[in-house]
Length: 121
Image (cartoon, one colour):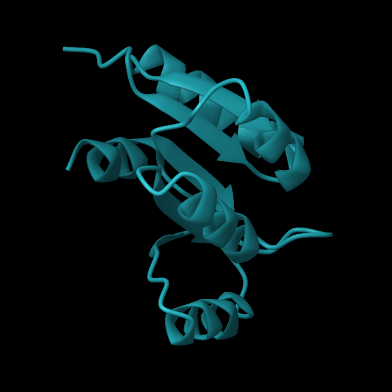
């Protein structure tokens, strides 16, 4: 049964990835919005509170880890799922853990079926 009440923000500086994941999630019954920059997701969260943030880790300007920490601080009920295909992610996640933040990570490329299983678990 679709869960149309779950608001999901998908953030990736690669526009095609962000929009494709949002389409997949919307077809699966979520209310997903795509953003190509963390600042856009932060601005949108003023009017619409996400239940889940899915973000790439390595992005220009603000990392997905920094974005995740922002959402944990401002919207503590928002769950976070990060994904990345870059080795630099390990250091960013380690630094976040040292600050008391622990986030789930999926490796890119993310298969839609794997993402949906993760979201429904």
